[in-house]
Length: 159
Image (cartoon, rainbow, N blue to C red; front, side, top):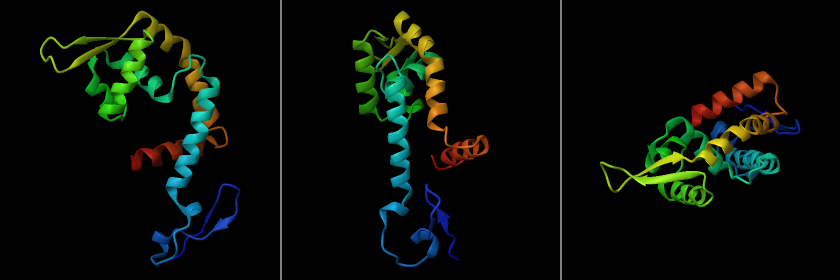
């Protein structure tokens, strides 16, 4: 059964090829990845315009999660922030260089680094929590409260 949907300006569109079960041609504007990328670009632009500390979204995620978990290993921080090992290493290296994160060898496993926030890292998180909430609100500003809740639930379901 064809189930039409509306694009972001309210125009009716045909159901995605998967939903129709036929061999329709691939149309970029009908793909979930296309819209997820646009939504992410919008969020990153809002984040960059409002975050005063010149932090990236991945740096902010690492700082906030580290505040909750510290002390923790770099690998665990990567898992908890959904970053692969190469990405979390680069993020941590930049945060260490900025004086926001301290690293030390793990006393029981020399292969692991234990991370903690520095005093400045703690202060950075505290200064920017309200800004981070504002960024989330601005990203979702075109949605009703019910739509926001539904979007979060659906994204969690596919992640």
